Amino acid sequence: MLKVLPPNISNLIAAGEVVQRPASVVKELMENAVDAGADSVSVIVEDAGRTLIQVMDDGCGMTRDDAVLCFARHATSKISEASDLESIMTYGFRGEALASIAAVSEVTLRTRSREDETGSETVFAASRHVGTSEVACPAGTNISVRNLFYNIPARRKFLKSDTAEWRHILSEFCKVALCRPEVNLRLVHNGRTVYDLHKGGSLKKRILDIEGKELAKELVDVDVNTSVVRISGFVSHPEDARKTSGNQYFFVNGRYFRSPYFHKAVLKSYENLIPEGFLPSYYLFFEVSPADVDVNIHPAKTEVKFENEPEIFEILKAAVKESLGKNSLIPMIDFGHDTLPDIAPVSYFPSSAAGRGAGGYQPLLSGIPDAGKPGVPPRRDFYSACTDGYDALFADSPTADSCMLQFAGKYLVMTLKSGLLAIHISRARERIFYERYLHDLDDAVPISQEILFPQKIELSPSAHALVSGAGDRLAMLGFDIVAGEDCSVTVNGLPEGFSTDAESVRRAVDEILLILEEDGGSGAMKNAASRERMAALLARSASAAPAGRLGTAQARVLVDSLFACSEPEITPSGKRCMTIITEEDLERRL
Image (cartoon, rainbow, N blue to C red; front, side, top):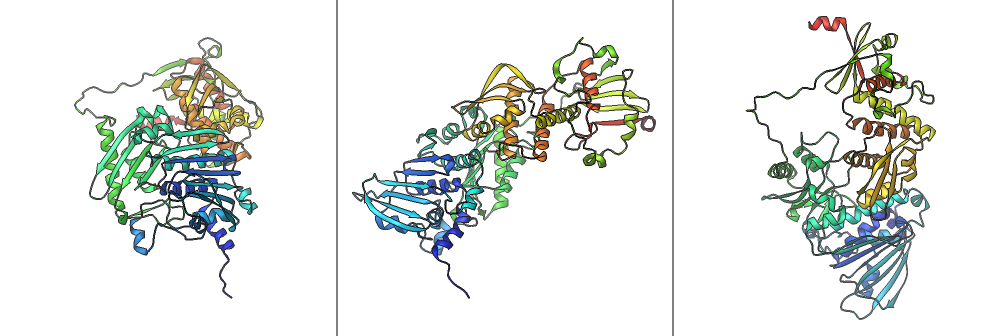
């Protein structure tokens, strides 16, 4: 038998789409405040939104009757007929947000319209109207959302850590702040003011106020106007691309949206300018006719559909590429140059037992585990398919009598009875460091190298929250990083193997952020798989650090340490660390 669901149940179902976490509430309430014509908006959060989310604005406010009606589903002032959907320029329009929020929390709404002398206070809980009374309050709206998901314990249980939920709140706040530089915006968390953004400045100033002044030197203007779309905003210099995500923003008609499709267009503009796996920052604003974009295809309105997507893709790609070219960021090739590039010379290392002494030794490889160090489990099962043909190598391993060459700063070539062994230096270091970090994670024995001049690095609040919430975890790995109160961190030490110059320290912090982002900011490595992934990411970062040319002793330490590994042939990602060139191979080529 069919029946109509009561409001308390239907609102809970709708809330599952609209209110996924505390950040969803922040997003909806901020957008309502902006739609109300607010000049100033304050957001106050306690316990990453679990205890309180309060949004205050000086917008148009509501009458007593509207203050009650706004909690009904599909109550909206934004649309009256179907044709209005083709000209939407406001954030909200479906009238689901407040009904959904009231279904899963305790809500107190104080509001006064500018025409009224007194305001009203309306209280809702679990979709039930508790009461409305007359109060004295300033014009505008002050809404407090307490005890989110108090009536749905299962939903509250599956919220992430405070650090993770706070990062989501920061993200939603910044999305609104970036496209509304004409509005004063303030964010307070647990009594501390995180952002106090003043109106009246340019878009670039608002970006710098959010992301930090260091970003100023990275930004390149983009501005193109066509009959299909106008695209304006900023992208970063290629050399400032980073592995971490978070500074990639698209907006259309003042509304944030996600688009892997247009993201690909931006990346194509940077083709051959940034390393694989790196991301440029971008803040790009699209202006199109409201009739040419559908913003009503996703409950959270974060996905949109454009009428002319292929054309906009090409315009975007060309606009970004042109901006990079105008700023001389795309290298030009001089085909008339008649000289050949320099080729690094071959270095010869006569290998001997004496080469293992202290003479000429540098602590480049001091973080490599000793031969036969216990506690590193064998992992032959995973790599067995990749290592066919190497079994004979270990019966014919290098000895102290082997001759060793270093070629192009990338390879070590040494003699065996059966031929030549070529070792890829950075991949060998990656395997060595991987097993070292995995051993440290399993035994919780941090080994750190102190930085002579500690480096202070400014971070965005979101990045700062990630590092602050993972202090114990980072210390376990040998990172000595102290989070300051002003969204900065001071790096005092790094795990052995990492370079400690200023540029390398900054790169190490970026790697940390990448690792924490990929792990969801959970702050703990709960199983072997997550520890292996952490060790692999750190090893890749350490091995990528510029090491210069190896000395005789260093080369020997590298080889000895590699062959002491449980899996010397393959990197954690499955790339070969070495290959054998047999006599037959040479005869075929000579």
